[in-house]
Image (cartoon, rainbow, N blue to C red; front, side, top):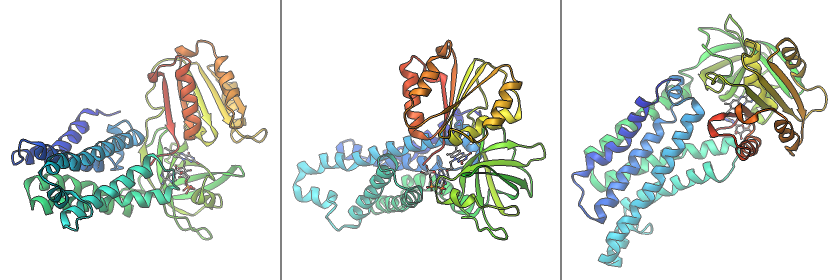
Length: 416
Ligand SMILES: Cc1cc2nc3c(=O)[nH]c(=O)nc-3n(C[C@H](O)[C@H](O)[C@H](O)COP(=O)(O)OP(=O)(O)OC[C@H]3O[C@@H](n4cnc5c(N)ncnc54)[C@H](O)[C@@H]3O)c2cc1C
């Protein structure tokens, strides 16, 4: 993991810069505080944009893409709160001066450009917050609505411009905002920072899982077991991929740079990938994630749920375990469990590895009973990977049974 200090200082600097450059021209009263919070909200919104740049180096400074997205969410919430307080404090200043003055400066119903731009920007940001934190919309719809936040930012800049013209504060907010927006438009969304691969072989360990072997057509991605890539599939002779980038953990890394992805049919795109064929063109971006990369020297418990197995599988396929490890593989099948035979073979040949295969439904009692039977559970470190609701329940159980936060490590197969 790289040092987080420099990126954090940069984020704080970008947050404060517009407010600090504008501060000298603000009055020392409720109006001044309201305006200051508006500038601070604009700065934190711009900082949150910097935290969505999916550059592998930048993401690794925060400990991985998922951790960087947590920072992105944190800055987004901060900016939302500040931007909400901005009109409230201004109301505290204008309302005592008379309802007509308050209405002129603040009412969303007043058709002045300043008001329309400001309120519209705030409404879109509120929608963005609701769709990210409260409504669990299908990923594609959520993504389109999230992109709408760019409109909110443009409207917000328009609002600042309508209030104070082209000021140094506006320039201080505008300049850093052009970096993530430019990067997103010119590099990420045009495959500018991706590498070409070709599907070289396809295997089906279960009828809803496809193992896709990828051969690099240029420089291979330098990736470690348990890390993930963002991959998009395009044309083959009979197959047409959806061309969208989705995250997948590599389940095997070969010395010559070939990578294997194990893809479970969970939605439209992954269902379609089940019929992929050799020769299909792919582009990969990464590497991302540091889930199992650096681990304290301590006995370990691995809990893999369903396709959440892939980071552990990649690790076992690359080297034997070096700590006492209890691996629990939770799955829905009673027989023909994908990868079970391979995992049993690893456990037979490695004295430090104990493997438990656990067929389960939504009731997690069998897993909790298995965990309770593990000797000195509280002295171990737990590594978890699986769907979010499963992980939440298991983490709650572990915390209730005395495990500290720093003993619980997880990768979530979902981010937005
Ligand atoms: C870090 C990480 C590693 C993963 N590794 C694997 C793996 O090794 N094997 C595997 O089968 N699956 C893996 N997944 C899950 C996989 O990315 C989703 O199943 C896939 O993106 C679903 O796309 P869809 O269009 O088929 O389904 P949808 O119905 O569109 O999505 C199903 C769910 O997948 C997630 N998702 C969809 N698209 C994206 C996207 N572009 N970016 C992030 N999340 C998205 C959303 O949470 C969504 O709710 C991983 C996910 C993450 C975040």
